Image (cartoon, rainbow, N blue to C red; front, top):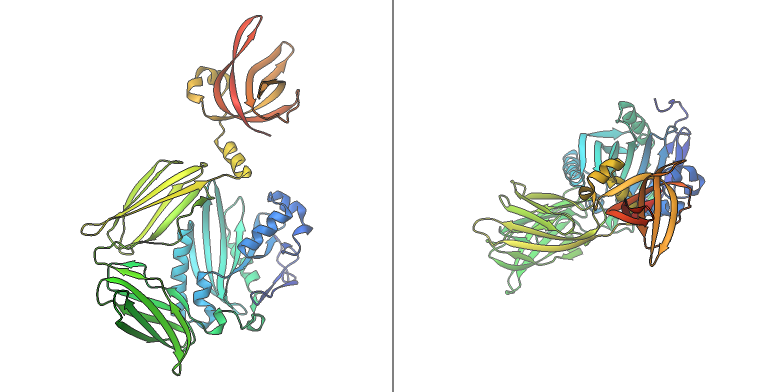
Length: 495
């Protein structure tokens, strides 16, 4: 058991005025908030972050609070952000059960696209906080696997998430129970959120837009606005002045759908006007829609990035059904994969992007009877110093000294790691040469290795250090006894 549960669990209240929420946390947790980050330097140290780095990370991810168990084997993280889902739904308590099921479907798709493996998904209705979507998950990023259970909802225009993550173990039933007790303390107040936010002002929010490209004449525009409002969609071809009208009404929850049928191929512009009692109160104009029966439409869930920041990059989106989609990548990795879309038109490619390099990415969409689409992108992975060191440590191998000598040709270019005694450091021209040995005896140094670097090394002769290097081959040393050859490396890192 992580801790003893007592009646004093919820003894400190934490308000979150930005999203109109509050919760209580027991004294058996170590609680961090943006205001108290500096009060727990030992915890930040174990996370490998400074106070300033943690503050920047929290602000970027919308973190309101973290609560750590006494054993540090589990952590609750509370976040509140404005995202596409919160703009679409604004407040799940104001929607019907059927509409919440649609939110669940959309959320599961979004989590899976982000790499989550969903082990269990269900709804939980809390007495104070209302309906939360409960998700037990596993998420692997590089060599690290995260496990946890989260509860999330949308209230007051914010996606509100309580993520209970565990470390170095599996998720237990007790973890879900502890999270339930914490979520049971959450209270939302409409009065704490300014009524002047864009979402609360009655303006239109769209969850489905006109497509940029389509090979069918019909599509649907969906969204949310003032309940009972009348929506008027107007489409007009760029080469014509004839308007076509499509109308609909928002339901009691403010949700609306406008079905549009284009009369012919071409480039079309669409606008939507919302009105009540004949008085317009909102207007939206969209980017052009190109309609061609031989066109293969392509849309992405997220833009293909120019800067790569993860060891794996996911490119996903939608096209028509039964389209052959090929992804070819060169540069940092050799990658060539082809799929055929099913009835959803969804395509996903997971590209290894751990190596720092320029990646040339080509996507080809083809289908018999349709015009082939070929899209080209260039993305660059530049590692931070911490990333670079992590890659070096992950890739390093440690063959025995005799094996290294015997199979030197096969090890050239590989990253290696050894614990070595620093025996001598020499400055030779623009280069520093570091002589090391695996062991030192009365008769001399054994298993000598040589490291080179173009900067003066911060190493002390006589010390024992862990050195990482890229194998160069053999280094010859001339002496009175003759020529000796030792394994040599470019120095990459010293611990």
